[in-house]
Image (tube, one colour):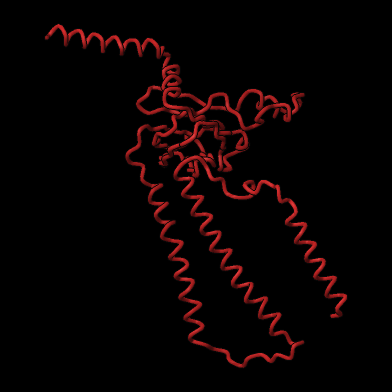
Length: 291
């Protein structure tokens, strides 16, 4: 290889690296795992980044040693290859070190999985049922249940010949007619099943997904820390309209959620509150009368 050819090769390599590194302002979160809004999703994200950094460090060490050896001991420098073909010490080292690395990664991973499987001490329960092709939600012990389907605007726009541009529909194929509303800072247990075929309930910001299987109930839990709207969809290829099963979770503050829950029951929260206050007043009056 001539010096001119070598310089040209190095220049091409540097140019390719510069092109790869040019979008400095890019949102790298789009190509990374979602951090989420729950303690468990944050634990999974931290675990993911820990394992990622470990693998990057291993890659740097292994490929660094390999490229250094290729450059340093190349034939053009007159280096002659070693004659040995077996080293017990080296084999022990490259067996023991990976074992320690795997154990170091397995311990935090096991802790996270055990924590996720523990659905005890939950404060409310939501049953999720997958249908072809929509979702059903039931708030256990709250006398509230409803179906959640693809919103009408998206449903019309997806029809052939509707004349509606999908781009003109806000949150096209990501909106529903009735959202799953939950309170923040509440440990919620989900019981997930299906009535027909296998679905999978998945909201990335919650940090997990669970298969919805007819005849089985899978459990999971979450505790959303930030009010907001979090979107997901069926993660199982469940049928021809699989792509039209969005999930929208709306997390509200506790008082707002209680108002929403009362509205779903057809109750007037103001009357309920007034009634409770009135009951307290009556109790106070009865206590005073007894004195």
